[in-house]
Length: 360
Image 1: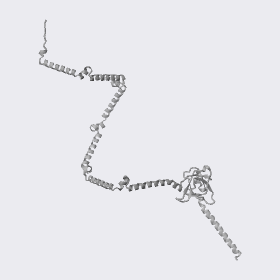
Image 2: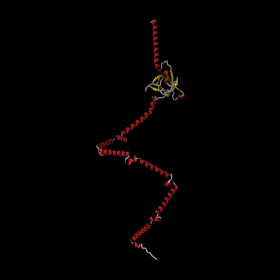
Image 3: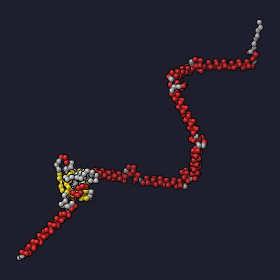
Image 4: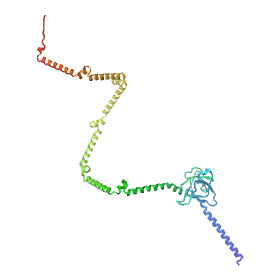
């Protein structure tokens, strides 16, 4: 049977052990809450509304530029019609010493730690310009796609990729089965033989060219062509130099200012003549501008055309002379008789040129 003193000592040891355990528990709680500023530190309450919680849990950390500044204290579904598109309310507690870095227009978003890590809240204040956020303020959200959204968005791409792969397999099977032009080109040995023959012929042509055979070979290998081309270039340079120096007719045309001045004067005179004609001065001007002169010229042309038409029809003396064969023959006979008479007078002028003088 233990004595009273032993019982008291045992109770004292138990009490001391309980006190030590409580102190250790308090210290552990203090250390665990130190990341958010300590257990007794006053904190700032913020709210954000999301379309989907994306697996966010109460107690998840809240980051500001990668630094843990608080944690999530509550997640609710609100029934307010104004929040129909963003019904998930996330309440966050932020350490007061970090509150100055969070602005009224800061943006919050849901992020994941790694690819398959836990979901957390990240606050972005890089582009924020308003003042510090007040207690119970609402931070606008920036929705980021989660893994499910990415998978759903890529589902259509995967389906299209499957379709493309099926088409590629079909094309490959068609090529392997010697169907179509490309299949024949790939699988027909005749094409290989023709290609080999063509390559051999090309190789022979290249050898002939390298040996200076044929026109192209001579063009590449014969120095005569090079010398002729070099001489031609030298002559061209000589001609260009003479032109630049103003020698010869072409050089004078390029360098002599007299030709330019004469051409300028001629152009000026032509402009004056054209202006005179346009103003109706002179014969050409009147012919161009005066309707009476134009009418007279038209009337003259019409009359001349009528006369030519009558002559061509054999009317009048000229028309008969041109068209009547008898008149032509008669005129020709008269001219022949006249020529014979002149010839006879020249031979015996006394017979034809006798003068009789009578005196009363």
